[in-house]
Image 1 (cartoon, rainbow, N blue to C red):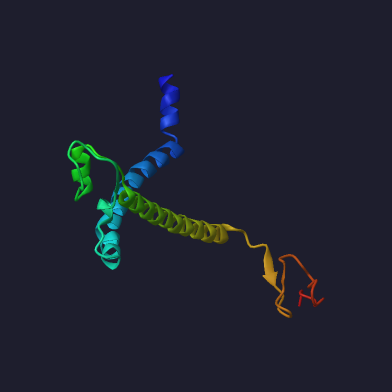
Image 2: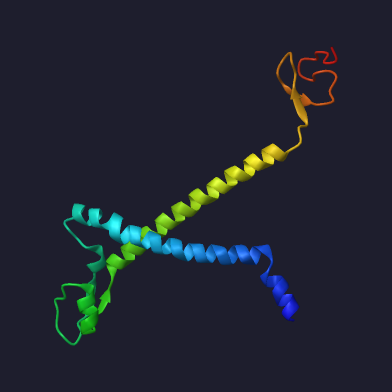
Length: 150
């Protein structure tokens, strides 16, 4: 049983998945910081100096009555709140991650196509008369009927 587990764990796909998860977790931290520390402050200034991390609606007041200046104060008082700002930050983070993953996948697809094109055997040539693509072994061009053995 240990031998089977070892074979499973050492397969390339499992190791690739593990590396992807670790890198993804680190990437999420970077994106969250980008959203919270770089993207949202200018947007907040444009929308009237709003701090999105403290944008919330109180559904039920806590032990101490409101209003609460920050979300952390509301939580400390035991208030029940809908955290709209944190949700907006999460949506923006999601779209940044999706865009970054799209760009990475797009780059890998481009590299794969270049590798496939470089490794693909040449099966066609151009006719010197009409420049149409024809099979390598052709003796006469099927497009312009020129004799190619000259």
